[in-house]
Image (cartoon, rainbow, N blue to C red; front, side):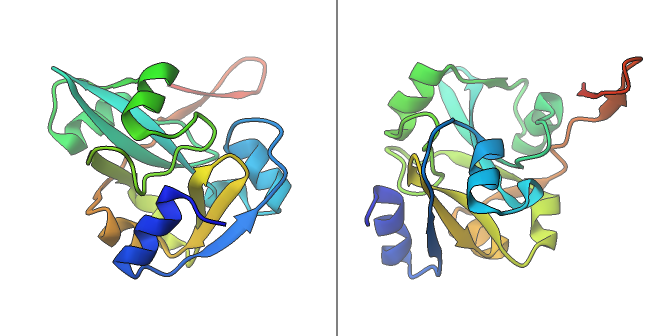
Length: 166
């Protein structure tokens, strides 16, 4: 099996292990369930519109939401917004549900949630739906020259007892 992400990692001599699964639903929740990997250690790759024709990526734990204001501060931009699916696919060359931070069409600035560094290994998308890569977070950070920071949205308990991000 080979994707642009896998080819890129091999060229960079970054270690990884391929974890394949039967893709049925997009998203980190399904990927974690299908692979048996903890959701907190399953990284989602979000494409971010940074304004003025500039874009970036945010790497987040699968069980947490992104705080766009915190991301903007880490990337030193005025504001950040999630890119639409079509734009994300055009920028990265990958389909939504298979977007990898590796081997994308054009270099983008990458921010990584700092708490991911506490794990020995994480899963990150391998550039195709149903293909995840098990890697050390420090290798991801170094390979992509990630800007590390607190990107987590705060969870707030609602009257119904469910947590919501803000």
